[in-house]
Length: 276
Ligand SMILES: [Zn+2]
Ligand SMILES: [Zn+2]
Image 1 (cartoon, rainbow, N blue to C red):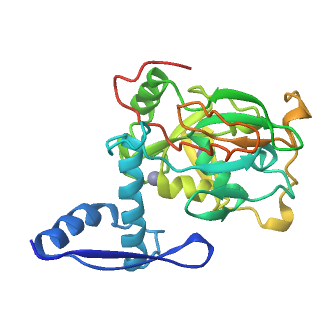
Image 2 (image 1 turned 90 degrees about the vertical axis):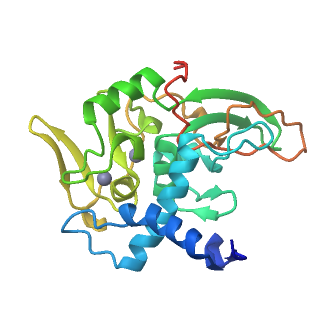
């Protein structure tokens, strides 16, 4: 094996420049893994090949995180960590950006997408950042629900998409932060690229008797303002910082660094017990 190298150089806004060298076998391994993921996702997929390869690399890494197959560190599975307020999760106008560990500030809709299929912990703070309460809110489908969801949808529900269920995520048609239930009626299986389209891209995914229908984004100036849904729980939480945490409960003390964060899609091993 020749000396391989991969340089990850931080760029503005938490982005990364990549530069490296892979030997013959390393290059072949990477290409063999990326090529199937980098294929065009239909006639309307106009991404340049370089873009599709980059997306494929991120999808590959995301799948490795989701599958829970990576070595644990400090007793936790590696996971993305996001800190956000409840307003941001609800998509309310004027809500602050979320914070992605290693990545910096992220847009509201990105927070909502990452939170759509994530383990979430709630941490309430008082005005001096002392921790008042730590809650555990499970927003990922229980293992049995996820199995039923994958059996029903059999893969990404976006018309024409062929990503299998094992490479897809669960999307709440009505976001849980706005009162949507984490159950079969409100969940669909969707691949990462199309999950992005639904959230950041502004496409609408609608279930009809004939199947799923997608509608293009509504121009920004025609969109109604996001408002809290009727019958939602207390506005008490609305200005409250939330932190999505991995399964180990945080043990913060006043003035100590706060135990950040979130776990996007949970590992979904077939043996995972139902905990919802
Ligand atoms: Zn979603
Ligand atoms: Zn898809």
